[in-house]
Amino acid sequence: MWQATPASAPKPLIINQQLAHDLGIDLAELETPSGTDFLVGNLVLEGSTPVAMAYAGHQFGGYSPRLGDGRALLLGEMINVGGQRRDIHLKGSGRTPFSRGGDGKAVVGPMLREYIISEAMHALGIPTTRSLAVIATGDQVARETWLPGAVLCRVAASHLRVGTFQFAAQHEDRTLLQRLADYAIDRHYPHTRESDNRHLAFFQEVVTQQASLLAQWMLIGFVHGVMNTDNMTISGETIDYGPCAFMDAFDPTTVFSSIDHQGRYAYANQPHIAQWNLARLAETLLPLFADTQEKSVEVATAILLDFTAQYQSFWLTGMREKLGIMNEQNGDEELITELFDIMQAQKVDFTSLFRSLSSSVRGDSSLARALFTEPTAFDRWETSWHARLSLETTEGMAVADVMDLVNPIYIPRNHTVEAVLTAATEGDLTPLHQLLDVIAQPFKQRSGYESFATPAPPEFTHYQTFCGT
Ligand code: AMP
Ligand code: MG
Image (cartoon, rainbow, N blue to C red):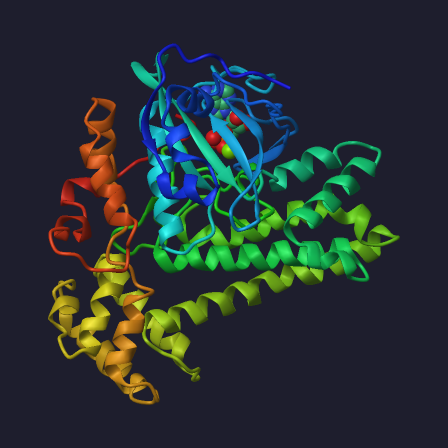
């Protein structure tokens, strides 16, 4: 049991009305001063026992046996209107026994950033933790300068991480590990309970969920930025939006995080890192897989190696959809690779390009062509692509409509997000509300929102993001 540091003058910056509704929370009550006190950790509801969770983790490949919620608290759980169990969690709620040298605090900009990006991911259909509210604490927090403090109220399928298993596995007695694994099975993958080897079936499920999640990130140009094992969930939800960002011009080496000097978490490395993290999860579970270490390693390795094929299959299916291809043909992969090669060579905006392709199917190539400095390379590719599409049985217009359902027009673009956060930190919340309105419907073109679909101006090309801010 732990307590939040009281906020001196809490004030809601944003409350997620739809999510409150989905959780079965009375919005009118949430919007009262005591609702604010609840969301910032000042008021502990009856029956709630806030805890700081323990976990370990590999950070940039180096192992820390004890990380844990250094600035967060799990308030408790709720059953939402769909009957699903959800964690209610505060981030930025003050020091805990896991704070080490940190102050346990968070500031307005990064908490709103998590709110924006997580809600954008949700609207894009990608599994993610959600954001219920950001409350300004009224207190100043020491960073490079003094900044206004804030608490994010986060909602998640659970906060079980690969790092949670790493923490449990450190105990000599394997009872704790087994209890944790069985808890995770009951909570996330109850159907594996009946398997001959439930722990192996559970591991297999986590691998599949992560393969699917990583494919979805890659298909949308998302760079998580800090894929440490403590930032990877067992549920398969994206978690911990620190230095993450969406890529503008396509470049597989894209890194935004200021501390990722080696590019460990670069865009194209993400699936490999996910597999590496899953190997760390497998190591913790070995005692549960089989009677001998040798046998456990053998069965776990087979599942781990299969990650690559699963990821590739999810990705290829998703890429075909992005290109309006409904059935499979040999040569599809080459067609996709060719497109990425010319996008990379000509630094083409990822989101704009994929969105523009539906217009090409409708007979207007000008939008796509305009994105290339030397459009002849695109023209050649487009000819092969159209030839490929002619093998489809679905009619062109229907194909274009389906493409618009998977290629977003609006993502939270880095320059827009920065402008919104700067305004909000200075007290102007209007741009925040407008951006949230735009990203809530990422696939539907709306007039008046053209600027949200435009790539960053050239001076924004060296965008950097920061961890743990
Ligand atoms: P993150 O990179 O945000 O996933 O955090 C990594 C670890 O650092 C976690 O154990 C966090 O709880 C901890 N941490 C991050 N920021 C702070 C802070 N301001 N005070 C205390 N602990 C922190
Ligand atoms: Mg984290």
